[in-house]
Image (cartoon, rainbow, N blue to C red; front, side, top):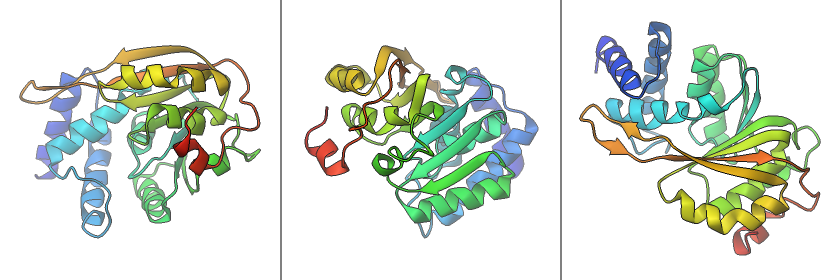
Length: 242
């Protein structure tokens, strides 16, 4: 796909899903796609390699959280992987200060280098384990929003993410249509970690052929400080989720 074809595909896909995409943003996404697919040859970044699918299932999908993030928020993307949703968010929401967090140093190096290539000065990438950094005073309860996309089951995710969120902020989990069942299983853990009101928002993705991919955002309001004993060591989190 040529750069012009890619930019036209961006315009169509974003418009079909009720998002605006400027020529500058489409150009940044083109540069991001070229780099990601090139690096993907030697590093496992994505199983999606068709450009149209990348636009819809990585970029448009990443922006579904944008409407739920306040202006000038401080955001942590827990388990960012190849930089989703943090890289597209940084492109489309330059008002945000974003920390991309992942346990794999090579992926974080890729995200950091890509952010520099794209001129995303308000995105920082850090390698580390969420359950360890959440106990650091530099990160604990210091973010307005914590996002997570395809990281873990919801009961595990809540214990990893909510400790990062300040009281009054929120956690946003990006899930498939099975989110309701996971949410029911996580209610006790949400409460233990300081979470309150929980809302599930449907945000289906529409492709060029009008096929629909179902997505759900789960929004959790942080109403109390997370007790210091959470998060636990990951072996305990995974063996006995809250």
